[in-house]
Length: 79
Image 1: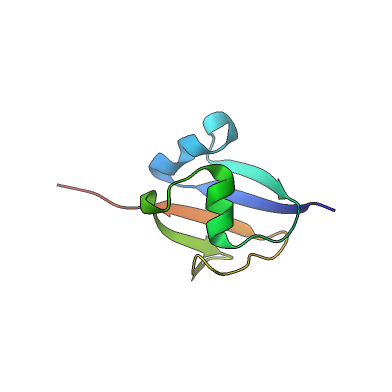
Image 2: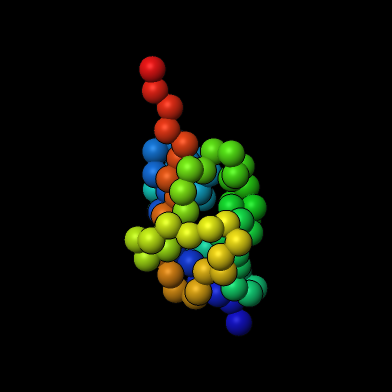
């Protein structure tokens, strides 16, 4: 039975999602840690400032429960 995640990527992280859209549904064979979800999406950790689950920041080693909305925020840069 697959585990489904709803992923929303912000700003320049959007191009990593299927179809380069801001949101996607990802299926996994088991519950994933935040780090594993990034690996599944082929998003380099260095490009992610924060992973949020249900609006709360989580550590990369946190296991994400099924059906959760995951938001990915990029590292900010400016001049």
